[in-house]
Length: 337
Ligand SMILES: NC(=O)C1=CN([C@@H]2O[C@H](COP(=O)(O)OP(=O)(O)OC[C@H]3O[C@@H](n4cnc5c(N)ncnc54)[C@H](OP(=O)(O)O)[C@@H]3O)[C@@H](O)[C@H]2O)C=CC1
Ligand SMILES: O=C(CO)COP(=O)(O)O
Image: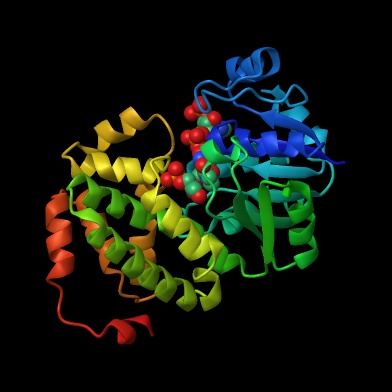
């Protein structure tokens, strides 16, 4: 059994810490809020993020980052994309030996256009990291804590590291595959949030299931076009971290991205939606980053581009759909190439 640290006590960090503790690992979860760490230790709950879950009593929490850094040599990074640089920078000074990092965040950093493993590599001290493995796939925290059957993928160029992560997390309700295509896994995981915002919007406009099926399918086409140009394996986008996660995020009421899009479709303003959500909606920043990536790699991404206009240029959600429907005529298959 391993000593494992989980950084970030939101929905996903907590759900994964529960899995690790139930798998028998000596698991410590770090929260940047002292009151939340005390709640986990004393009441075995995390009411804000997983209101109906009783956490296992062998799951311990701390708000002391130095204690977290010294707990073990496997570190799971589960803070939202915008907090990763800060947490990596802060923890680096406490790491005395190389650690295996696992990240579970689904975003791209705007402006630098870095994937999470790239920005972690840049912001962690060089002598602090053995490998960085990305764990991703269709997996809502709310269902994992109910032990509903879930499948994810651990990806790393060093397959031994991916297999180590597979062993740590895998159990009877969480099945873990491996993949060596880090680019494909990270791009699929981040960009599905963009399409889920758009799918939520069409649902908010009551456009029905045909429109949603079209967004999922054409969304996958544009994610794949960009991801392959960036060096991802085309097959990865048809797998769990591509199509799988796209389906669950575009169709589940658990998805914060889908819910945010739904509220936008019903006419709410972005600031109001984000205030009401109280949890991370990664797709908003990732839409900006993806729009920038589409320009950098010269890849046509009509859904991303229209969503960018809704989020950042005051385009009405209804106009997003019209702009997509009335684009110049195309061949479906030509667009895939
Ligand atoms: N929820 C899910 O089902 C899944 C989520 N993911 C991904 O996991 C990542 C985390 O998401 P999730 O747990 O759902 O998000 P939540 O919004 O549920 O929780 C985010 C947590 O991170 C904390 N946090 C925010 N900024 C910082 C920071 N700078 N330093 C330290 N802690 C910080 C928040 O603290 P505070 O309470 O103070 O705001 C909160 O505890 C995202 O990238 C998401 O896409 C991946 C798969 C499934
Ligand atoms: O990534 C997720 C499920 O796989 C969670 O999606 P949301 O962030 O939209 O809730």
